[in-house]
Length: 302
Image (cartoon, rainbow, N blue to C red; front, side):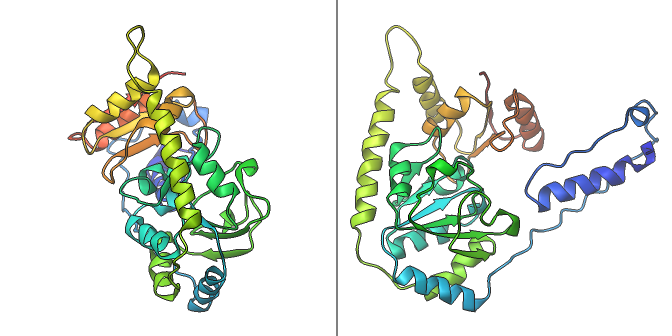
C-alpha cells in the first residue's frame, strides 16, 4: 500500500520463488507505482537453503519390496531430479529401468546416461512415449508432467516428489512418497534388490537409437535452405560447454528439446510451465546479468 513496503514485499516474493521452485507475482497498485521510491531503499536478500526431505524408512522398504516384484519398470524424470544425476543413473542400473524425461528434466537426466531413452510428450520422441506406455510399473521422479494421454492406463504408478500437492495431480497413483529426489534415492538404493533381466531396457534403448537416428537425419545440411533442425544442432555443437540456452515457446522449444545437448554444466531455460510468449530474450538478459562470464544463447521466434 506504500512505496516503503516494496523492499520487504520483494524479499518475500524472492524467497517464495526459490523455496517453492516456482514463480512469484507481485501486484503493484497503480497509485503506489506513481509515487516516488523511498531514497536508499534496498532489499536485504538472504538465500535460505532448500530443505532436505527424506521419506520414512518404512515407506522406503515398502517401495523396495514393490519394485522387487515389479517387471518392465520405467522411470520418468522431471526438474526435481536436479542434482540427483549420480543417484538416478545408479538406481536405473540397479533395477534395469529405462529413463524417460520430461522437457524440464532434460538438462538433469539426459547426459552421461546409458539408460536414457529420450523425452516424451507432445514434442517428445517415439521411444520415450512407447517406453512409458509399455511399462508395467512407472516411477515418477520430481515431475509434474501434465499430459494425461501420455500416461499408461494399466501400469502401477509410483510418485516421488518434494511437493505433496503434486502427488496424483495428473495421473492416478498407486504409491507415493514425499521427499527430494537425491536424498530419497540415496536412502532407497541400499534397500533395492538388483535385477538381471534387461529385455525391457534393451528394447527401449533400441527404440531410442532408431528415434535418435531419425531426428539426426533431419538435421543434415541442405544445399538450398538452412533448416531449423540443422541450425539447432550446430548451435549445440559450437556453444560453450557451460552455455545457458533460453528458448521461446513454440518451435524454438521443439528444436531445443531435440537437438541441444546437455552435459551437466549447460542450462536450458524457457517458459515450459506457463507458456509465456517472447520469454527467451528477457530470460537471456537475466541469465547474462547473473552470470556475466558465461555464454548465453537466446533462441527466439514463434
